[in-house]
Image 1 (cartoon, rainbow, N blue to C red):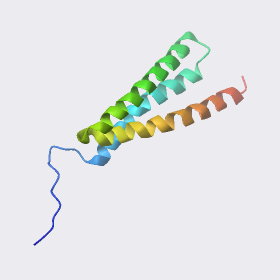
Image 2 (spheres, rainbow, N blue to C red):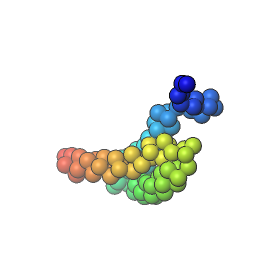
Image 3 (cartoon, helix red, strand yellow):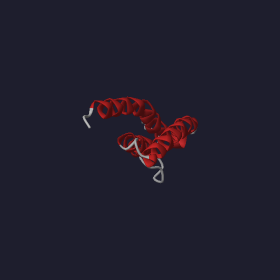
Length: 102
């Protein structure tokens, strides 16, 4: 008797691809926030920063929802990774923006 694990259906993408899709989606609020921090003195920069904060909250909620479903669980893992990474990168970007000579 052979004990083989069941094969993954062909229509389901690999888990690593789903994880990187989640990271790519989670990068959107991060990039908007960094651009918003860079030009915060203008009204456009302020709106970009607010949009980034709103998208960050949406990403947090979406990651929790994705974790509940087996099919998109690894997308949720990627989103959750970016939920933890984004505040750290924002803090570093703020520190660089403050210490930059004008």
